Length: 119
Image: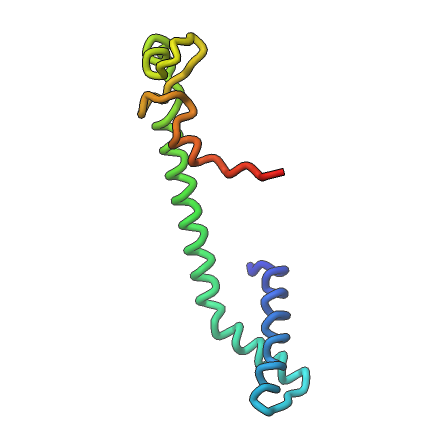
């Protein structure tokens, strides 16, 4: 089932683009013809739009899976001796990343976090 709001928005954008394009070429079309042209163009590219949407979902899934694997690899150590030694802070409260043995959160985990908004 197509996404109704997105489909309606695409149809409105296409309809609004037909008039100026036809006028720029020195022609005039009644509104019903503009709608028919816009619908015909969108119907012609509908398969490409659907394929692009499926591709985007696959890419997002791959990105999410990759982030999950990275987070599992770069996690706080549970071994306090190693955590204290790995961090170099000498504090019982310090945690080290199990993979890179730097203070947790390590640079890799920090890079996965979304940027903080500036006030």
